[in-house]
Length: 473
Image (cartoon, rainbow, N blue to C red; front, top):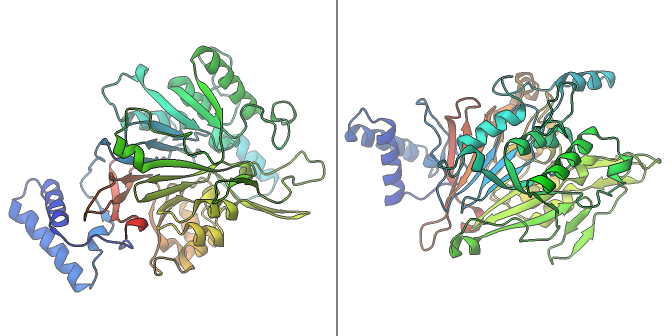
């Protein structure tokens, strides 16, 4: 499948692909590599397309993704089972994780069957040999930007928990092990933080945890209470800093490891939304209208809609992530957190789909209009048919070109149920990595590439790009 934007055929592009083919076919001669490249270019001309060099490449050779390099931005979306997790390596090597969950599978299945829901949850990936956090940590260590650092010296500079649901935070089960101190249980985020020190942990509730009710005392969430025990111990014993997510801030997440002045001037993360607070285009923060509670007792709400959301700018490149932002109906009408969040973000190049794709509406497609959409799937009913129709059938601001849709985890029976819509999914069932080149000056544009990595060995299964960020076109 061709990508929707391509690089012009110039000397640098030819040289890069010639070298790539030479490396891939090292046992052959240089002439053989040149011949292979020539065939690619002829096929492009015959097809009347200038985007062949940005098509999907499926590697037969088991090639590993090259290590992160200073100046590049790498964003990893992990497939480790019932967990949502993103891992960022910023241009200066600052590390940042967004969410790390876990779900107690037996308890989940009992719960959904009581509700007569026909949903399954996928097992651990790549195998039950580790917990979700165990696989997450193994993955992070494999791509750590400073491999010379010992395991004990590695520190996550930032951790953002978008909201307090198990697939983003961790679920307590009867077999959840105890921490080293014995003061809390290990699951998801708390297991990651028990094995790797977190310098700054940011969430939607700190310090008061009082929205929409007193979460400490009136919300019977075992996951949250275990998390609070974890944060208390690590603030006291390990020097971990805690912060509340500051809506509107452009400095809460920043490069911390001696970035170059050029990188600093081209990099910013803006916090868009948390709880029902959202930033406007003029920088003011306003309340999203609507009733947050689902019943008259005012003790039940949709935690998904409390999610934090942000947009990241690096040079011309823009990326959006919004946790489980979505909308629901109640007795007083509709509470829609998708539309005002999308309006706050504006047009982007790459976006994760809100709430495993469930938080997709017309505004998401129109106001964000991402060229690349990453659906972090978990359940057997994801992605929804409506999600796929919105992402594939709506005209786009870029002239109607198709989106590139990748799903980290999707059931085979779900693909069958989607029918022809499943053909719009270009890559599935693996780790999805977005790699953004440093901002450039002059005639050479900034680019980004997207990779699907094998869930176990982490070699490249598919590559898409390079793409132009829309601002550079």
